[in-house]
Image (cartoon, rainbow, N blue to C red; front, top):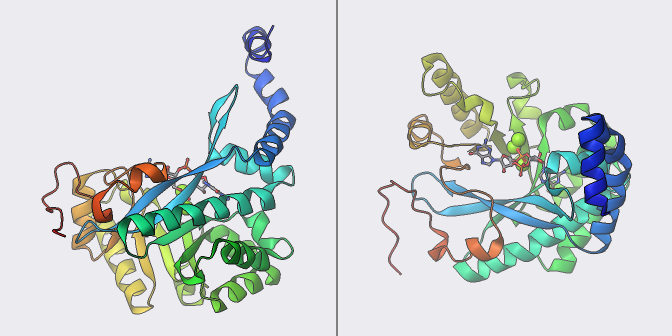
Length: 290
Ligand code: C2E
Ligand code: MG
Ligand code: MG
Ligand code: MG
């Protein structure tokens, strides 16, 4: 009997508890093996300039195809990595993969592309985080100022002086910091000017009522205005419809990411997009002439 059959039989016999009993340690062991075998990869999701459709950046999202469980959601294996002491290795592996992919895209498109990489709070508070990032960049021959590290608001809020120092060091080297999932934490507007951030990624939650709520539109417009004044670039996340995209643009948003434009995808696929210029399915933007 294969492991998978055994697993399925147990799961069927005892219900959902099997998964939770067996997953924690197994997942960590399997993840350690996958990291050692370099079996993880990343997909890239474009960040587009709303006015032109040009891909100005990409976000690297970690992907793990487990031999038996199939594709494991990043939220699950990132948590497993944090609990199992593997998060530094995972972070470094993703960063190295992303750097290599960034180079492929820049070569294909003949221009510079910002590269977003997600950072776990556990990684950030650990020893030597900034040095590790800078070393990976150096090994990959990538400039620091085209890397955007995405850190959630709650992590920035909760992290102590060591993490703040790491962010400061990285910014001094030119690395940009994005506040990810903005709007899901405490989102204190009064502290926007103190956040060590160059970009702000407006969480998808902002969009759910955007097209139907005039009050929400006021909020987003003023937030965009505030960020513009503070030199913080805003990227709207999880844009799924043409209506959301055009409304965001009307409210003053310049950059967005979401299924409306493109899903996360392997670098080879994205590199085939001519000049890195996305034309939305029913969009009117013509492809640029060479
Ligand atoms: P995130 O950084 O906020 O990434 C955006 C998530 O939204 C991605 O989910 C992406 O696939 C999804 N998404 C993109 N466009 C749309 C859309 O139009 N609609 C909807 N509903 N979803 C959209 P994914 O890839 O499952 O990643 C989930 C989270 O896992 C990420 O959220 C990030 O926090 C974390 N994560 C992913 N890769 C890494 C990594 O390498 N390291 C760390 N520490 N965390 C990672
Ligand atoms: Mg992110
Ligand atoms: Mg996000
Ligand atoms: Mg998110």
